[in-house]
Image 1 (cartoon, rainbow, N blue to C red):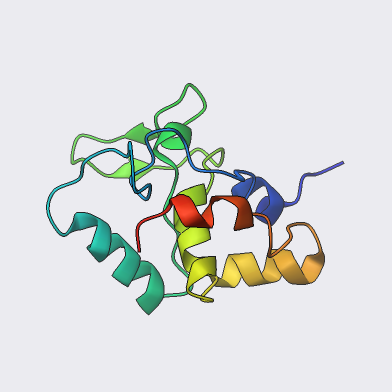
Image 2: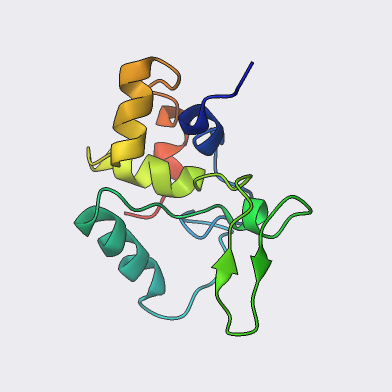
Length: 118
């Protein structure tokens, strides 16, 4: 049985303990970087933001000599990013497809919304 790629990509239901989208305890990014990520997600509903733990894991992809990431297919969308989009009622295309297929619920990230930056 093959796994649903949308369910796999959206498998994270809560942010990591150091997710940059958290109000408290998140990884500190360069000034303006988080807002830039959010603006990028809002301006292109075909985009995603991968969870850093799924990228930097034994199943994650590889970085080439030029600093470009080659995905492995095991990456997952950052739950903080997904919840931030849902908080703004702006899910990505992949999220909407997963909702329509019934493999992910639009309420999957509701429990963490209050923990996120505004």
